[in-house]
Length: 118
Image (cartoon, rainbow, N blue to C red):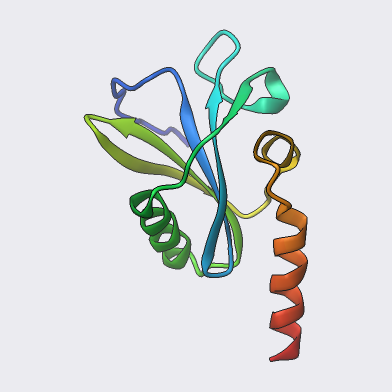
């Protein structure tokens, strides 16, 4: 299997938004250590990102498009717009909790408790 992707000019960072249910709960900018890989586990650096109404809306629509739940939505900034390039259903949030001080596990537990009560 081969994949082809268009190379786009963008800042040397991406943005990860954590969506739990119908709420965008936290966001971070991720900066690469050396190459374009922004993974925090590979040495990337995290910085808190204020979630604007636009970022929340884009992230929630992206999450809804794949069935929602507990997700992270990765975006890049291109020509003043935010573009979704990846949605993850297995999320790592330690760097985000440490950086933003948002208690993502608490949001997840609350979401799951509400789901099982339905």
